[in-house]
Length: 539
Image 1 (cartoon, rainbow, N blue to C red):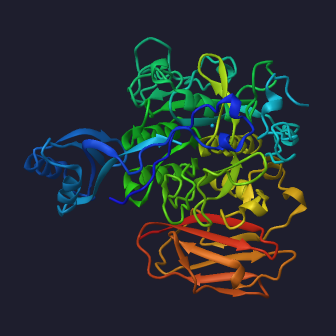
Image 2: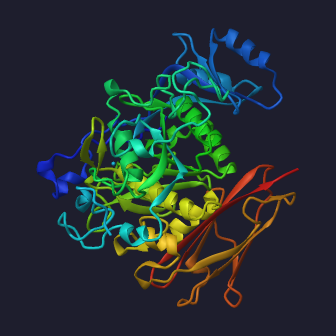
Image 3: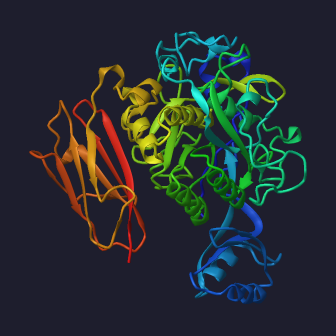
């Protein structure tokens, strides 16, 4: 196992430190090495291997199946006390019938104007310099509210700790399962969950989506940034004044694990949420989970956008990955944190190739349990700003796919010199630009269009030509302005015709599976555009 850092829960900032540089630092961090649930591993048999084969292997190791994850073919294996996790992984992966075995990694939490009294403290939405920062170092939320303030038809899953659904700034925007009758102890909609009226608690395995004894501050805070009810005379406002927040708790007082995260993602997709906020993670290449990656890819297949926190270790995710933010799944947006001066927060992870954009994440005021409010710092707080803008896009364009939402958010991020070379877009989230399709600050960026193979398409060609038209109004682009990635690996043998603006790359022989493509184009003013898509090679 590689030494790495895990994401930490971000605690309320001491009011005495508001506006100071010290307020940027989250006050709690998780341990410095990947951790996993002791006595458990995750095992996936190869296709076609009968269930009895795993039972035989378990008997040989004095182990048993503790749980099966539906829809993915993965089993949680309960190990005997004398079989360490690392040894069990090697032993099961050494069996011919096993596709993979891996630890059950622990995952950690990574925080006209409306008449809401504390609105003027929300610099991330509208920065007038009120917190000592730079005016307009914000996401331009008021500029877009003339167009849309959101709609209850847009369902956003908050996969996190629990949410205080009775908070007066949240209770009007909490998702309700119309197929379930409250309190009758019957699974009315036959989805496998009894009385899941407002979501589910995968940590305690019950329908109570808020547990005061667990704290559940982090999830409540995240939910408020996405969709605290606006213009209701209460506290703060979210990026959306109206949206349906689906509480999906899988994090307990300190951590959660892979099966809970997977089941929460599957639930969100099954119940129609097209966007999820994921302010949690595990750092280091040793935390790569094939089981979690498969769940995110399945969500992509259902058109679900997965917004993830980049991490709070102040490190380069290109060198030390942070999962799930670093998965190359095309539906993932990885979010760094910026401060009230549009600089990268001192604690925020970054990565030219692995982090997509920044958003306000320092001293963010939002909802807390018990009708409270408080300021948190972290990429956890930056991520729901992006999720909130995705929800505004979906409310305005209900047919948008996850690819279209992601493309709008990244293409129209606001370029910032302080972020250049630190993330793929070199920019900070801008709601107005994303919803109107107008570049912020009159900037121009390269455009990436007419991609081949088409996004979501299937081909029998195992060596397909990957292509795109990459152009810019002000810069005569060359191949030096363009980076191409196939399945997360940089490819340098592509050709670029400066006359036709056409990029072409003949792929090596590919496997029969889904493949991910990313193109990054940077113009002479160091403005970047990113285009990600996927296609499938079929037999």
